[in-house]
Image (cartoon, rainbow, N blue to C red; front, side, top):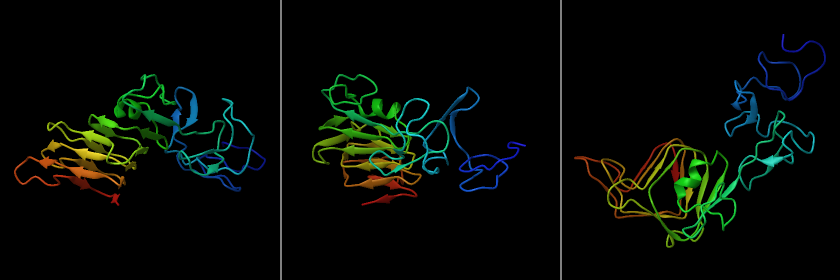
Length: 219
């Protein structure tokens, strides 16, 4: 047995234990075989506890929001998940983890590559190369579509999103692909306040010259 005697509350164990707040859902640890029991964005333990100590084993204050800028909620376990804000600016110094404007990444993809679900990436005015979004981040064009541009250079699709991400405040332009020339968005992505211009699907019978949106929403 996992537990002998006593009462367990707000735990994530199988088989299910009697007591308040217990679950058998996947805790989605960062690297359980390697001994890293920090939580990832997919964890069922996020926001699933009730109160607790004021800091975790890393010294991170508790509670933290699950999504950057969202409400706080105590997580199960010894480590509190915390999302990051990262910055992108053509004139940044490109110093990871890009958490201040002077240290900002100079490409959107660089910030995406070190981000996890729940993080927010804020992009300053500029024209940026094509991107692939594979985590549930919020990607925000700070100055809106007029000033924040993702450009495919007439040779590739500018934006591919394969996660439940938010993509807001950009122009997507000059894309070219067999299908979905401008944006391909799947798995619950949200597209908001985005201008799509001068993109094409080049295959015979190609679809979605500007946008292919599957299992998501656009506004």
